[in-house]
Image (tube, rainbow, N blue to C red; front, side, top):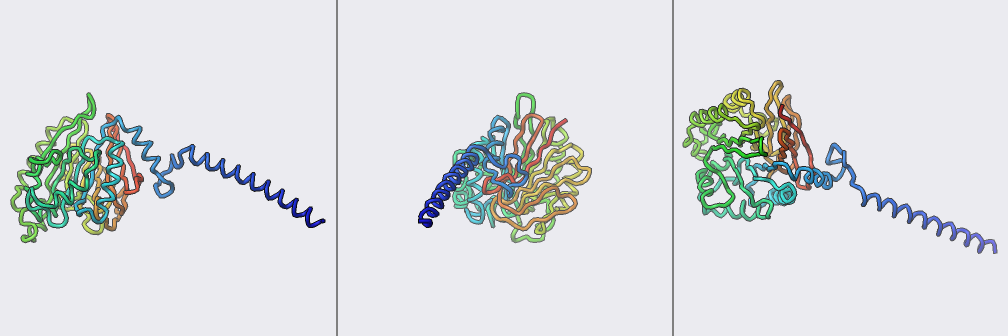
Length: 343
C-alpha cells in the first residue's frame, strides 16, 4: 500500500516537472527565434553574424556600394566557388554598382586570347548569378602577365561586364548629387624589378613603359577634384604577409604620390589574405583583399591594424562623406569593419 502511494506521488511530481520543463523550453525557443542575437558582437567567431550582415545591408541599401575581390582565378577550385557564392548573396542585398578585381584573374598562367576556355571556367560560369552581373573593373596581376595581358583588355570589346579599359585607366563615379569618387586602376607587375629577371615567365612586363604610367598617375592625381580618391593595383605597397610582404618599388614610386595628393585608399591583392595597414603619420589606408581563391598564412607588423588568413572579399559602402569597409568571409560573417569620414 505504501509503495503504491509513493509511486503515485513520484509520478505526480515527475508529471509536474515535465510540464514546467516544457514551458521553459517553449519560452527559450520563443526568445531565440523572436529576437536577433549577437547584434553588438565585435567578433564573428563569438556569434553567428548572418543576421548582423543582413541588418547592415538593409541599412546600407541606399548607399553607394561596390565589391572587391582578388586572386580569384582558380577554375572554381580552392575557395573560389565558395567566395563567389557568398558574393552573390551579399550582392543581392547590397546592390553593388560594380565589382573591382585586384588582379591575378587567371591562375596560374593567365589567358592566351579572348577565346581562351578559362574565360568560361574561371569567370563567366563562376560569377553568373544576377547580383554579380554588373560591370567588373579589373587590374592585371603577375599571373595575368604569364599569359597575354592584352587579351584581358580586348575581352572588354566582346563582354558586357568585363571593363578593363586599358592596362591602366581611370574613371569617376557619382556617389550622390554632390559627392563623386575617382578610381585609378594601375598596372603594377611592370613596376617590380624581379620580373625582368624571369624573362621566360614574365616577358610581357617589358612591353610596358613604367615611366609613362607613373607620369600618367601623377597627372591624374594632380588634377583629381573628387571627394574620394581610390587607387587600385595588384601588388601591395605595404603588406605584413610572409609570402610577399611590402613591395619596395611601390613604396618608392607610389607612396610619395599618395601622400602628396591625399589618396584615401589603396586596394590590392597578391598576398592571399585580408589586411588593413596604415603607416604611422599616413592618411592613406592600405587594404589587401587577395583571398578570393587560395588562402595563405598572414602576418602582422608595425603598420598592421588587422590581418586574417581566411577566404573572402570586401564590401565598400559610401554614404556621402562617410565610408565603411567590410571584410566578409565565405560564411557571410563580417570578420572586420572600419569607417572613414571626410572632413
